[in-house]
Image 1 (cartoon, rainbow, N blue to C red):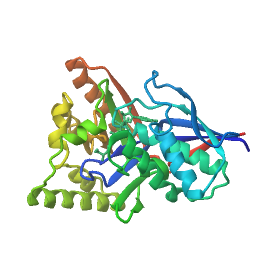
Image 2: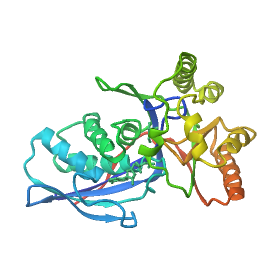
Image 3: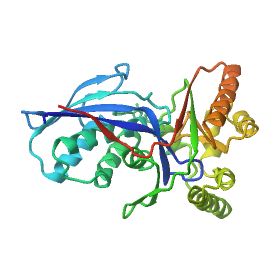
Length: 311
Ligand SMILES: Nc1ncnc2c1ncn2[C@@H]1O[C@H](COP(=O)(O)OP(=O)(O)OP(=O)(O)O)[C@@H](O)[C@H]1O
Ligand SMILES: N[C@@H](CCO)C(=O)O
């Protein structure tokens, strides 16, 4: 085997109340990366498509390169790898674009080199790449993109990550207005101190959301989709967000929040039909403001990254 291509899915980080500690993966949308054996030692990014010429080829700046260098150092591999990145995700959208690149690269390289590590052990390398892309080694995009489903980061030091139950019939809609929000910028607007009453509210909601997922209790999930930490500072950066929030409940959606650091908004719904209707309502709100949007409706992806081709 000389080359492997892997796909890694888009992800919704935070899921409202789980700032930096919760995320889930979606189906179909994502990045593809081909990793090939090369004669020259080290990692080289040799092709990038779908990014409009905006992403760096420098191995220490591209998330594929950063993740692979850390992986090769950890397994003490002295050979060479070439990387081709096919971007399927828009940049700065809030759909975990930088994470999908590094995760697909790691999955492809790990398979190419005979699976020296299990999937979960790849996580720290992808987190390192997030640090380069957005200034923080947060795991709430890379962990679900790697492992699939809803993933909880119980602790960063030491890293303690666990997959959660995905209720039957749970759908999400992603509404991506054509705006770009850089993750580093939307992290910089956050308060550094959280009042005790907000910490209590947020803890109740994250516990309620986890319980709701396990109990398949859509009402509990819905009541728990509230964020008093990041959303108040960030929602002002997304025109129409407040109007969307009140409108989507009328069609039976469970809730709406900012996907990652935005501007994409995510909706959770108890069926595909409700997710589709809610996403159309969002589109109407953005239409009024004059913003073009892309809509995606998806079940939760439970398998995470996977190999699509070996040669
Ligand atoms: N392969 C890559 N290599 C380097 N930088 C990348 C790569 N893919 C995306 N980026 C950049 O990473 C930065 C971080 O944003 P990213 O695109 O991950 O955020 P996002 O998709 O908005 O997701 P989220 O808010 O969920 O983290 C952006 O400036 C984007 O251009
Ligand atoms: N938890 C991160 C996710 C970024 O996608 C944040 O909200 O900044």
